[in-house]
Image (cartoon, rainbow, N blue to C red; front, side, top):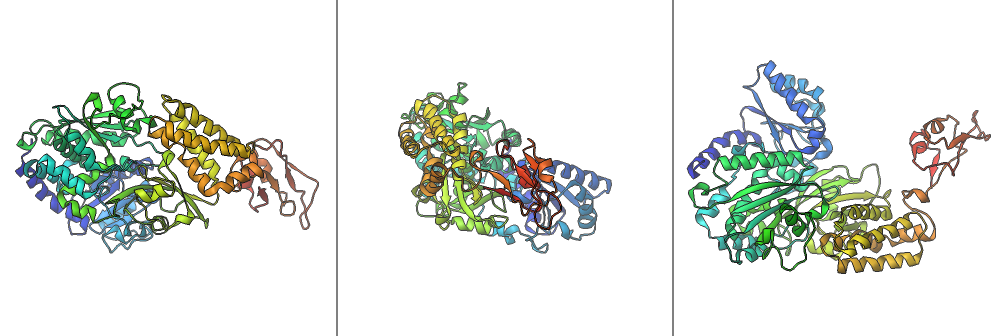
Length: 624
């Protein structure tokens, strides 16, 4: 167990090590991304190769390896940054390590061919890159900066100072007041004011209360919470302890999906270290405050992201939502007053305590304060994690940070909020992103997934994709969700296959509003949103599928055909060889200037896989 004085000494001892990562001279530090994205791209092998070569060359006194969390720019991983120079190497392979050791570590020379295209090796900051310039890091402040499995590095970045301040200088009411005045709203999707939630629980009588963390992030394309847990797990533990002190709780639970093995490992390591240092457990730092945390694993049910279903799962039952009221702040986990916030919400808490409510409230918009983390994916050049001040426009995110839609295609829409959200069309490209603005245009913030679509995406198909997900993930407890969403999927499927009528379209829209008004929990109530938002902005696409039996984007298989332009075809036969069902055969037609007969597609045998179009080198395959 450490004392407050011992923690201060650790902080001071770490300053020299961490200063190297700010461009100050010192022993070189090789930071290697250890997030899920780069790990899946063999960053473990890169680290092992660095370790082996440094040992063989006896260079341990010149450089050390630091495994970090996600740097954010997932599109160019694996990422290696070497300090104090701050040289940003991207798309590094195991085979590149020997050159980096020989040139950079031994000789101090930059390996220019591996330097990220937008960075200047002489500048020791990532902020020069378009991807980072307009970001503001609060929740992600330590991700890609520290070794998440070393508690001393977190302490060196002012870690646990907020907890010390709370336990020695503030009353529980003062803590709640700071969080309330900051304007922090829940980052899990609903955007409920965090301070108000805490105050409800604090006002309840009784000695047993609970603090829960929702790390069951399940939206397709979302990985914000996972990355925080992988890169800065102690920020969540510290915030939960602060929340426990504020509401009078002594027990916390982190509910994390088992599909996040790296996040699970790091949060478990963090809990163990915090207990060893006396930052969790009995009589924390000698202040008389007790607070402990357990990690519970979820089996991947999307419905367990809903707060009452999550608590039911922690209790050992099937994860199904409960009617509200009573709300969890009054009757939650095991029937006791409970607060539940998601990972990103907690990641802001310690910084608010240290820097003050006014500091946090100075960022963002009038009703949406602070920053928001988005997982940027889909048809975008720079995929990865983005943290921006609330009120930043969609255009800034897509064009400046994301560097636009690749391959010369046009931006069509961005899906936010996952299966519970909606599509933001190009006409709202300049809308400031915050809770209220997104709701006003038929979308929602959600947990922070942002999937970009271009002109080749069919909006009927997008709605179908999210409905398929929701049907699979429905717990089945209430009829509007169990039956209603499946009926919605049947309607959209008919439309995508060209067999629906305009009456079906009207009935589908009416059903959407019925489900929203009658489903038991947030999963069912928001399930129609992808349909309603695409109908709102892309109704003509639905009508084209119904009235013209045509998919304008050429995506819905039942409505597309492949043919061969006879005058372009040179008779090479590559399309025929590539067809898996032998639906392409030679004709008697010979185009002018060609010596070989061309080919034709048998529409009855064609399975519309597109293999012929992919193999044709002269673009003679026509897709309609």
